[in-house]
Image 1 (tube, protein in one colour):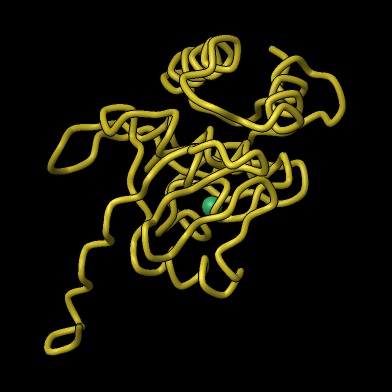
Image 2 (tube, rainbow, N blue to C red):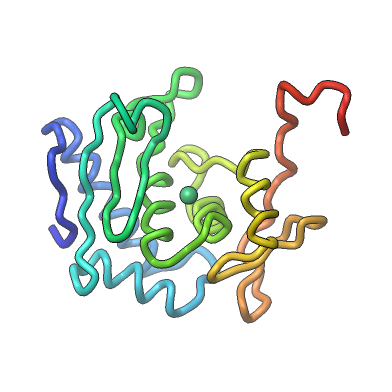
Length: 181
Ligand SMILES: [Zn+2]
């Protein structure tokens, strides 16, 4: 395997391999626009060119109590949650989650990672639209990513060539916002 993967229980090795194969196929036949440099970098990560990316298993404790995954530098930590069916939908979020973290490794900010996750992966593959917390991050980043930008009014995400990447849905209202618009 091109990516170094470490510490995964054997029942997770197969879904991880299948997910990497899915991501590789999608990069070969892009379902939508993606800046050329970003696509090159994602393909280089999968091919094992520089940088070598470590994908490690984080289990369900400690840093993995809440999130599905984390990334820093050239290291992705996949948590148990990414491999387990969601309580209500039965959806396993691994493909969308791993792709999201790969976009971060390729320099992507939160907006880039959320945009290509939503544009390239289906709900059944674990993609989820950005929530209010994500929109707060977008705002802090002045509605820009490294690769794309978003219009906060239309929620349209476009790349440097003004190609439409995805249009985000309105974020669901948070439960603790009763009485506010
Ligand atoms: Zn992210």
